[in-house]
Length: 177
Image 1 (cartoon, rainbow, N blue to C red):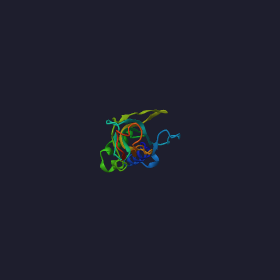
Image 2: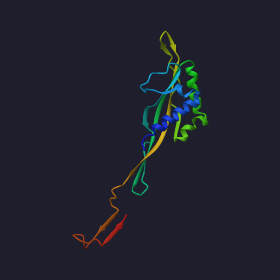
Image 3: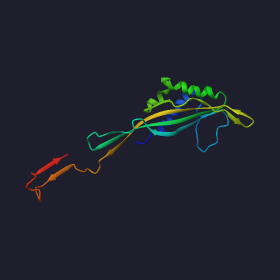
């Protein structure tokens, strides 16, 4: 399995929708090669950055010829609201992280979420006036695994037939692994 990007996007969208109460047509994923909505909207960058978790990978050898590698990843998602009341809308996302019902969407996808940075006021000029903008970064923790299988069946049987230079030193032996 690779990093669960579709689970992250689905969880983020559902979480932001529940946290803000915005209609789903007011929530967009950034950088989709589409024009921005003309009215107020919320933009999500679901994966702004990825890094290994603090412990790195955990490698498990169950003894059956397989190896399981469990990855911990910290993903930063960025959420920006454009429109009146931007600080209030983004504050509702921060509040929802601590709300067990609203943040449960991450747990249902085997993810967890926490605040990664303060809310930033990005109000900027737009045309002849200003547009309210605010953003927040969320840290999403993902844990997933890869399985590696010994599909070559090396060393399933070791057999010595008692021939050659070692004939008098090693007894006839068969080992099934």
